[in-house]
Amino acid sequence: MANVLIDGDELVVQIEGMDRLWSLKSRLVIPLANVRGATADPGIAAEPKGLRAPGTNVPGVITAGTFHQDGESVFWNIRDGSRAVVIELADEQYARLVVEVVDPAATVALIEQAVPR
Image 1 (cartoon, rainbow, N blue to C red):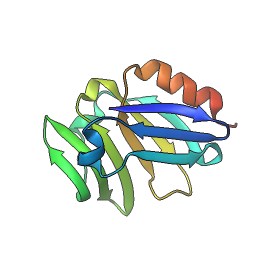
Image 2 (image 1 turned 60 degrees about the vertical axis):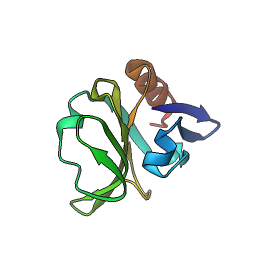
Image 3 (image 1 turned 120 degrees about the vertical axis):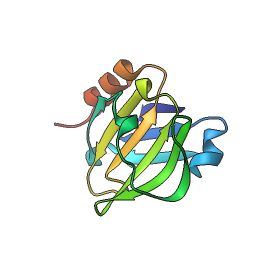
Image 4 (image 1 turned 135 degrees about the horizontal axis):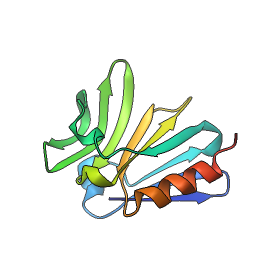
C-alpha cells in the first residue's frame, strides 16, 4: 500500500510495510509540475504489465516495482486492484505510477486539486 501526500510543490508517494521490499522503493518524490493528473482505475490490475525489472509480480497477489512496456517505465504497487490509483507523469523516470491507496477517491481529489493547470 502507498500513502500519497502533497508536500509544498511535490507529490510524495511513500510505500508502506513489506511493499518496500517487493517494490524495491520506499519513497517517490515528483515535482507537481510533472504530474498530469490522477484517476481511480480498479480495472488496471488485469491489464498487461510488461517486463518486470526490478520488482515482484505474483498475479492476483501483488504487483510491485518497475515494469517496462511499449518504451515506457511504469511503477506499480498494488495488491487489491479495487483501490488502485493511476498517476500520469511527464518528463519523469516513470510515465505512470499505479499505486494502491486506502481511499482512491480522496487521493485522486488531493492530486487533482494540487496539480497546476
